[in-house]
Image 1 (cartoon, rainbow, N blue to C red):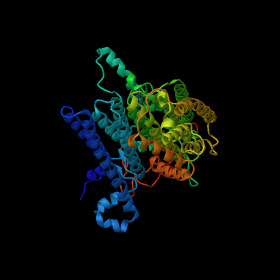
Image 2: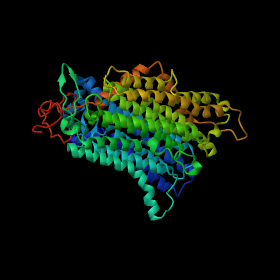
Image 3: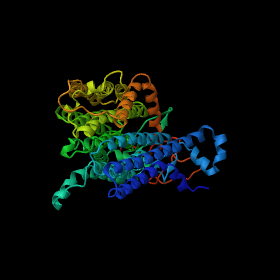
Image 4: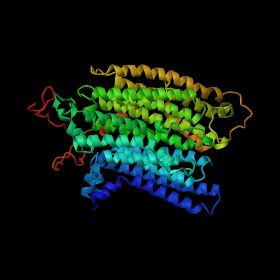
Length: 587
């Protein structure tokens, strides 16, 4: 009979496969470095990396589908498992490793998405011969994917912090073409300080939350600071007065949001998204930053501010709610303005696309801030997830274009697109439509997802909705117009008469597949399946942001311990010591 640890490890099989594959790729590259030519070495490393991706995808399918089969047909599936394992797999939201990670259905689907995107990114990375260490690059991409999967499933602050740090370090090392140049000790230390600032702010914010609640689990923190109780079938979120009126919770929210904002990969790596000849990261690494890393960071942000700290960030009843809205709105506005300025000034295609990612990161933050003031918070968060999913695949298709330029010309200047639409009309049309999708024009998937997100966040009948969100709506519309001016710089050379520079070679499957797939998803979720995607993501947001308690018959755990997750929602009863003015008894 499998032990609890073995059952928990079942849900981490995809993570283990990717981690072992990364180590094998790195070891194989070191062994082959001195014995084979560069092309043969790259081919063998690619085979090992894609073998790991294939095995991880198969493992992710098994981990996701087996529990679904057990719940769909328990009568027949009970014969294949022991009673304990069958009961374990029947739980739609099993707490694994003491509640540190979630193993629900959305986490399984997100794992498959990460692995699929990773395969496309690896194809882009191996299509160019720029890097001299293909094994090192592939291993870091594999390990960063493990960190993204863990960050998405994290249910505790320290687990989330370690996962985000692992992801950031792997992507930073992958973005360097080779080992860093030697530098004096003082200069080397000072160069690392800016990279530690987001981590330091995030860690201080975690410490402030822990000092107030003596807990690090999201659900335990939510229970401690939430005194909500059902009334007439509805639940009103009310912050506990013991924590609401202090400066520490406000400082914790500001520090956590600042840590997320600076750690947001699109913002942290914007300066380094330059010409490869100037030492910028490969286009494939930048694409992975703007897709997988952005997805994991935003999902983690939603779990922290719309689940664990929701009684502090809810704009309707919390003292800290307006503070959260003001700070989040300011960060969103700064992000959109910085991204638009970058899109108008950059002459490098990779940098221009990364600036656009900054603008869309601001849109996502508007959706997250508005979700805290929405009537139905999971519905608004689901609309943000739908927008984020389309953004990930669309960004990957767009970043395949600078990877194409990098492969054939070694540079990613916008001028390198001269005549590309005339040379390859089909891919030229696909690239043009993807560029329009970056501007979020109607009838495209990103526009539908953005419209749903803003309607859910801003269009509800919530009287406490802050007017600042309406101002952000106008700023976002203006930002879309500025993006149109920035992306015109891509469309003009795309169909301009070719210059004297030699034509690009055939794109190949590694370049063409992300472009075509990104276009297909953009068009499919534009009108035909927009509602289906929105409903699926809203269903995924429910367990992502739900607050649950142990099952009947299990011993309840102390507030600071890891909670056993189940599907039975409950809120703590009102605090008897609460007074209308929030004062304690005797004061």
